Image (cartoon, rainbow over all chains, first blue to last red; front, side):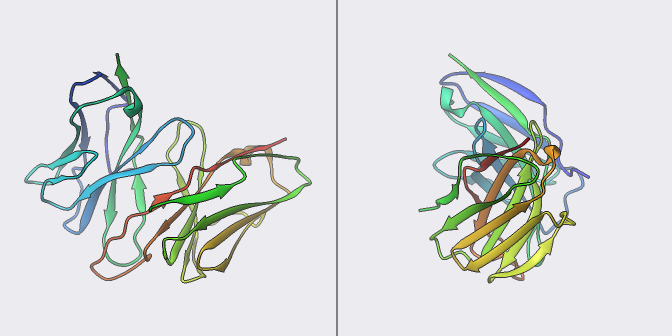
Length: 111
Length: 117
Protein backbone atom coordinates (compact mmCIF):
# COMPACT_ATOMS: atom_id res chain seq x y z
CA UNK A 1 0.00 0.00 0.00
CA UNK A 2 1.23 3.47 -0.89
CA UNK A 3 2.20 5.42 2.20
CA UNK A 4 2.02 8.83 0.54
CA UNK A 5 -0.80 10.85 -1.00
CA UNK A 6 -0.17 13.50 -3.62
CA UNK A 7 -2.45 15.52 -5.90
CA UNK A 8 -2.46 13.94 -9.36
CA UNK A 9 -1.62 17.17 -11.17
CA UNK A 10 -0.68 20.81 -10.64
CA UNK A 11 0.11 23.82 -12.78
CA UNK A 12 2.60 26.58 -12.05
CA UNK A 13 3.64 29.69 -13.94
CA UNK A 14 7.21 29.89 -15.15
CA UNK A 15 9.39 31.87 -12.77
CA UNK A 16 7.10 31.35 -9.81
CA UNK A 17 7.67 29.01 -6.89
CA UNK A 18 6.13 25.56 -7.31
CA UNK A 19 4.87 24.08 -4.04
CA UNK A 20 4.13 20.36 -4.20
CA UNK A 21 2.33 18.88 -1.19
CA UNK A 22 2.55 15.33 0.12
CA UNK A 23 0.64 13.63 2.91
CA UNK A 24 2.31 10.79 4.81
CA UNK A 25 0.09 10.55 7.86
CA UNK A 26 1.26 7.04 8.82
CA UNK A 27 4.98 7.83 8.69
CA UNK A 28 7.09 6.20 11.39
CA UNK A 29 9.86 7.80 13.38
CA UNK A 30 12.64 6.18 11.37
CA UNK A 31 11.14 6.79 7.93
CA UNK A 32 12.64 9.41 5.66
CA UNK A 33 10.78 11.49 3.10
CA UNK A 34 12.36 11.40 -0.34
CA UNK A 35 11.50 13.29 -3.49
CA UNK A 36 12.32 12.19 -7.01
CA UNK A 37 11.11 13.53 -10.31
CA UNK A 38 10.75 11.87 -13.67
CA UNK A 39 10.80 13.84 -16.86
CA UNK A 40 8.89 12.10 -19.62
CA UNK A 41 10.37 8.68 -20.45
CA UNK A 42 13.59 9.33 -18.54
CA UNK A 43 14.88 7.72 -15.35
CA UNK A 44 13.82 9.18 -11.99
CA UNK A 45 16.08 11.97 -10.77
CA UNK A 46 16.83 12.38 -7.07
CA UNK A 47 15.86 15.79 -5.71
CA UNK A 48 16.08 15.89 -1.92
CA UNK A 49 15.34 13.96 1.26
CA UNK A 50 14.78 14.67 4.94
CA UNK A 51 13.88 13.08 8.24
CA UNK A 52 12.41 15.84 10.38
CA UNK A 53 14.31 19.04 9.72
CA UNK A 54 13.74 21.26 6.71
CA UNK A 55 16.31 20.73 3.99
CA UNK A 56 17.57 22.81 1.09
CA UNK A 57 19.88 22.04 -1.80
CA UNK A 58 20.62 23.55 -5.18
CA UNK A 59 17.46 22.08 -6.68
CA UNK A 60 14.76 22.53 -4.07
CA UNK A 61 13.67 22.96 -0.47
CA UNK A 62 11.83 20.39 1.60
CA UNK A 63 9.56 21.57 4.38
CA UNK A 64 8.40 18.85 6.81
CA UNK A 65 5.66 19.64 9.32
CA UNK A 66 6.47 19.28 12.98
CA UNK A 67 4.26 16.19 13.34
CA UNK A 68 5.89 14.80 10.15
CA UNK A 69 2.51 13.89 8.70
CA UNK A 70 3.00 16.03 5.62
CA UNK A 71 5.67 17.80 3.64
CA UNK A 72 6.05 20.29 0.80
CA UNK A 73 8.63 20.33 -1.94
CA UNK A 74 9.41 23.83 -3.12
CA UNK A 75 11.01 24.62 -6.47
CA UNK A 76 11.84 28.29 -5.93
CA UNK A 77 11.86 29.54 -9.53
CA UNK A 78 10.17 27.02 -11.78
CA UNK A 79 11.28 26.71 -15.41
CA UNK A 80 9.72 24.84 -18.31
CA UNK A 81 12.33 22.11 -17.77
CA UNK A 82 10.80 21.40 -14.36
CA UNK A 83 7.73 19.91 -16.03
CA UNK A 84 7.76 16.32 -14.76
CA UNK A 85 6.08 13.79 -12.49
CA UNK A 86 7.20 14.37 -8.91
CA UNK A 87 7.21 11.40 -6.54
CA UNK A 88 7.05 11.74 -2.77
CA UNK A 89 8.41 8.57 -1.17
CA UNK A 90 8.85 7.34 2.36
CA UNK A 91 11.76 5.12 3.14
CA UNK A 92 12.77 3.18 6.19
CA UNK A 93 16.31 3.84 7.25
CA UNK A 94 18.63 1.10 8.39
CA UNK A 95 18.29 -2.44 7.23
CA UNK A 96 16.37 -3.85 4.31
CA UNK A 97 14.91 -0.62 3.08
CA UNK A 98 12.86 -0.12 -0.01
CA UNK A 99 11.46 2.92 -1.73
CA UNK A 100 7.68 3.00 -1.34
CA UNK A 101 6.49 5.05 -4.27
CA UNK A 102 3.26 7.01 -4.35
CA UNK A 103 1.35 7.78 -7.51
CA UNK A 104 3.15 11.10 -8.07
CA UNK A 105 2.10 14.62 -9.08
CA UNK A 106 2.28 15.69 -12.69
CA UNK A 107 3.63 19.26 -12.51
CA UNK A 108 3.15 21.37 -15.61
CA UNK A 109 5.05 24.64 -15.83
CA UNK A 110 3.30 27.12 -18.07
CA UNK A 111 5.02 30.04 -19.88
CA UNK B 1 29.37 12.31 -10.80
CA UNK B 2 26.14 10.39 -10.20
CA UNK B 3 25.79 8.73 -13.57
CA UNK B 4 24.25 5.36 -14.23
CA UNK B 5 24.29 4.30 -17.87
CA UNK B 6 22.00 1.79 -19.54
CA UNK B 7 22.14 0.14 -22.94
CA UNK B 8 20.34 -0.17 -25.22
CA UNK B 9 17.98 2.79 -25.02
CA UNK B 10 15.31 0.94 -26.96
CA UNK B 11 14.82 -2.77 -27.60
CA UNK B 12 12.22 -4.60 -29.65
CA UNK B 13 12.14 -8.36 -29.33
CA UNK B 14 9.95 -11.28 -30.23
CA UNK B 15 8.61 -13.71 -27.68
CA UNK B 16 11.15 -16.37 -28.67
CA UNK B 17 14.20 -14.09 -28.59
CA UNK B 18 16.93 -13.91 -25.98
CA UNK B 19 18.31 -10.47 -25.24
CA UNK B 20 20.16 -8.69 -22.45
CA UNK B 21 19.97 -5.26 -20.85
CA UNK B 22 23.12 -3.73 -19.49
CA UNK B 23 23.69 -1.23 -16.69
CA UNK B 24 26.96 0.34 -15.59
CA UNK B 25 28.06 2.71 -12.84
CA UNK B 26 31.50 3.96 -11.86
CA UNK B 27 30.63 5.63 -8.58
CA UNK B 28 31.98 2.79 -6.45
CA UNK B 29 28.46 1.86 -5.41
CA UNK B 30 28.02 -1.65 -4.03
CA UNK B 31 24.24 -1.91 -4.39
CA UNK B 32 22.48 -2.13 -7.74
CA UNK B 33 18.81 -2.48 -8.60
CA UNK B 34 16.48 -3.37 -11.44
CA UNK B 35 13.06 -1.77 -11.65
CA UNK B 36 10.20 -2.18 -14.09
CA UNK B 37 7.94 0.74 -14.92
CA UNK B 38 4.69 0.53 -16.84
CA UNK B 39 3.16 3.64 -18.40
CA UNK B 40 1.77 6.18 -15.91
CA UNK B 41 2.81 4.02 -12.93
CA UNK B 42 5.68 4.40 -10.46
CA UNK B 43 8.67 2.06 -10.75
CA UNK B 44 8.36 -1.43 -9.26
CA UNK B 45 11.38 -3.07 -7.70
CA UNK B 46 12.47 -6.34 -9.33
CA UNK B 47 15.92 -7.22 -7.97
CA UNK B 48 18.53 -5.90 -5.55
CA UNK B 49 22.20 -6.83 -5.69
CA UNK B 50 24.41 -6.06 -2.74
CA UNK B 51 28.15 -6.63 -3.05
CA UNK B 52 27.51 -8.57 -6.26
CA UNK B 53 25.14 -11.00 -4.53
CA UNK B 54 21.42 -11.18 -5.20
CA UNK B 55 19.72 -9.95 -2.04
CA UNK B 56 16.14 -9.35 -3.14
CA UNK B 57 14.03 -11.00 -5.82
CA UNK B 58 10.54 -9.56 -5.75
CA UNK B 59 8.91 -12.75 -7.06
CA UNK B 60 9.98 -11.94 -10.60
CA UNK B 61 9.23 -14.62 -13.25
CA UNK B 62 12.21 -16.74 -14.25
CA UNK B 63 12.13 -15.38 -17.80
CA UNK B 64 13.99 -12.42 -16.24
CA UNK B 65 17.46 -13.45 -15.10
CA UNK B 66 19.71 -10.89 -13.43
CA UNK B 67 23.48 -11.08 -13.30
CA UNK B 68 26.09 -8.95 -11.55
CA UNK B 69 29.48 -9.88 -13.02
CA UNK B 70 31.36 -7.21 -11.05
CA UNK B 71 30.72 -4.25 -8.81
CA UNK B 72 30.21 -1.85 -11.74
CA UNK B 73 28.04 -3.94 -14.02
CA UNK B 74 24.51 -5.28 -13.83
CA UNK B 75 22.82 -7.28 -16.57
CA UNK B 76 19.25 -8.41 -17.05
CA UNK B 77 18.89 -11.41 -19.34
CA UNK B 78 15.55 -11.77 -21.06
CA UNK B 79 14.11 -14.96 -22.54
CA UNK B 80 10.65 -15.98 -23.72
CA UNK B 81 9.07 -12.70 -22.69
CA UNK B 82 5.40 -11.90 -23.07
CA UNK B 83 3.88 -8.76 -24.61
CA UNK B 84 2.83 -7.64 -21.11
CA UNK B 85 6.51 -7.43 -20.20
CA UNK B 86 6.80 -4.38 -22.43
CA UNK B 87 7.86 -1.53 -20.14
CA UNK B 88 10.64 0.86 -19.21
CA UNK B 89 13.37 -1.06 -17.37
CA UNK B 90 15.35 1.07 -14.97
CA UNK B 91 18.65 0.39 -13.29
CA UNK B 92 19.70 2.20 -10.13
CA UNK B 93 22.64 2.12 -7.75
CA UNK B 94 23.42 3.32 -4.25
CA UNK B 95 26.50 3.38 -2.08
CA UNK B 96 25.28 0.39 -0.12
CA UNK B 97 21.91 -1.30 0.30
CA UNK B 98 21.59 -1.78 4.02
CA UNK B 99 23.35 -0.29 6.97
CA UNK B 100 22.00 0.12 10.47
CA UNK B 101 20.98 3.72 10.94
CA UNK B 102 22.13 4.66 7.49
CA UNK B 103 20.29 5.90 4.46
CA UNK B 104 21.75 5.98 0.98
CA UNK B 105 20.29 7.60 -2.08
CA UNK B 106 19.48 5.56 -5.15
CA UNK B 107 20.57 7.05 -8.48
CA UNK B 108 18.76 5.93 -11.60
CA UNK B 109 19.83 5.40 -15.17
CA UNK B 110 17.81 6.63 -18.15
CA UNK B 111 16.16 3.26 -18.70
CA UNK B 112 15.69 0.82 -21.55
CA UNK B 113 12.35 0.98 -23.34
CA UNK B 114 11.46 -2.65 -24.09
CA UNK B 115 8.78 -3.71 -26.55
CA UNK B 116 7.85 -7.38 -26.81
CA UNK B 117 6.01 -8.33 -29.97
